[in-house]
Length: 480
Image (cartoon, rainbow, N blue to C red; front, side, top):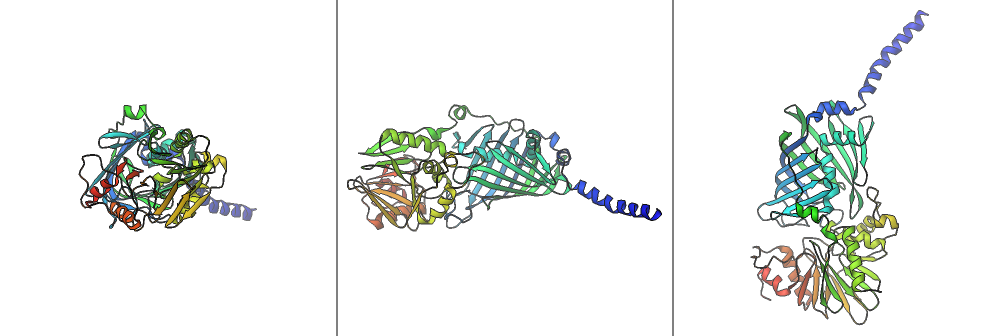
């Protein structure tokens, strides 16, 4: 009997530390909130410097996003009003400028990016510009901050399992946080809706926490999106409960989604320039079908674009949509076209990526393509492709030697002497002096037009406004 009791006592002594360690291995939201000081935090503002990367703007699908130097990055968050403001001062990091994301930067570029509730906008030249395409990501960024994780988890009945905290905000994002030593958030993994790829993974890592007036906050932050770096920040200053008052401008409230507004300009018989907002398209009527050049931004834009095209050319099917390049702002509407069985024409370097992206699931916010379950039809072209119906000819060329993208396409109508392209050249505003030296992207476009011997009268840029070819020559300081 004594031996039995001795054995039981020994087992108890062995199991007790194990039981304690198992208990310690489970996170508790209240303990995490206490460790962070989250219960006393209504707002937070932090500033740092490092590097930032432009998502969806690589020179070739599969390469990392292009990098910028960040002289200053200040994020201001108000948790009570679900508002966030990012203010960045960034400079050129890549030399020569390679890929997209508003390059090259001369001097400093200042960005002011905001979200409040279900409205997102940017401040451009002191004016608010709605940015609904950025809404889901900015909402995720707000609640993926360490204190935001705790507050959102409590509000959305998070599942706490082991050292992870997981919850979903329907129609917006899913989030899983890992709790590290000291009950501090060390990693956040999210799934966010994306117009091009359906769902896109975002991973944020936090470490080197320090105390700021009784509130713990990390001084090192790294982030990846789609598996590539998007942020590397060294935090220098943190202000808990800073005054963060973010008011939605009237212009944003009154017109929260300008992507659906389309202005139509007939530029030739059977050819229309569809503008409105920041990104444009061209509609070309053929004998028994229609070709659309560019489906940018998001599904909402493409739905409006499809409706306008059918109004302009009733009774003829839309057979092709030409994609200038894979950058997310220029490919964001392709899923809506794929849902209707429209064939996407793109450069061969983009073909595999777009086939996979347009066929990828969209579980966070199911879109038309996810609901249709259609297999996307994507055709890759090389340096040249000609579409003709015997009456009208449409010539598609690769813009060779341009650093913006290795597979950029431009569309030329020889009979009408019209040329459409994206990002190689965006006209400056009237009476504005062109930059010096000229953008290498602008020079590359002019060189390609000359190399191919194209007789261009007017340019139909997919940003900006219709201009004669002479305007491009003026911009780069070259005689016509």
